[in-house]
Length: 148
Image (cartoon, rainbow, N blue to C red; front, side, top):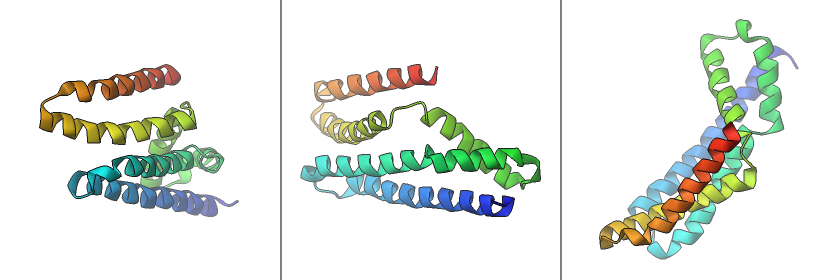
């Protein structure tokens, strides 16, 4: 594949990731503004799936191959593409160390925890949120170990 074609494929993949990310942000916004409280679990699963899809694109073999190919021609790339490459490489290196299923579980937990946090704050009852906080901390500790 030519450098031009590789660069085009790289930006197409980044564009797809951006589209999924925008959809994810809309779900987060909806959950914070007007979504019915009883839909929190389903919404958390949906957020988890979209987050997982984004994670999978960022850590895919396609992304790895594009990063490898572009890094070989780094000096021939524009400053903007070099920066996009640098940021994508950093994300790839960090995220590829985390098991995919574990990341999805973490994303679902984050969404559920946010819903519970709102309820706990309204009721002034931190004990509702405490188990979620512990699980989030445990996930982050594991992620830190994966990163080395």
